[in-house]
Length: 236
Ligand code: BMP
Image (tube, rainbow, N blue to C red):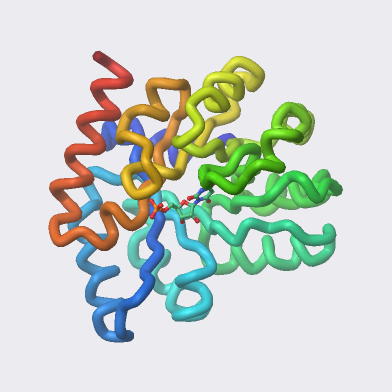
């Protein structure tokens, strides 16, 4: 699939911004109102929406299915369930991810045995993004296996990898090792310490931001600032 749909939206909107729609600490009514507000306000500036376990656990798959159905012509949707299981479980979950309407799924790579998952993803039309370096301070074991994970990502021909924006040296290294057709997704911006545009400058293709936009009183203002910083990093 090679993220065709995501690149199309990124070019249309001149944006590399993906929102992590982690709605934590909202009452049921606030939750839905805030999601609708964010989705309607950010449509011109945000190319993708990442939905993870927090929303799946709080609202269940049917809510997510309906949300994606309403906005599938405006955003690219990434399922961040960080798959890390044995093949038959990962593959079962991937079928459900597809069924909810997602365009892509994030998987860990360290567990191995992922050829079947990548083949299935190709058959059913889901892009696969593998994690090679996490953004948080405690992710020290990733340092030991980073090169192996990159080689595995290449071997599998995943569509993208995750490298934390807080670790630009690893973004630079990933960009060197990976062909240009494997995109780099970078979370860890603002709340976790990286500056908007910094990951793009190091060679990432997309920046993922959650709390700094989702919980902001003025999400549009922050999103505009981020997109301007990204454009500056890309085009000078
Ligand atoms: P925030 O901008 O609020 O820190 O959110 C970052 C998002 O990116 C979260 O959804 C988190 O699950 C995800 N993420 C991350 O922060 N670091 C990683 O290494 C991998 C992630 O998926």
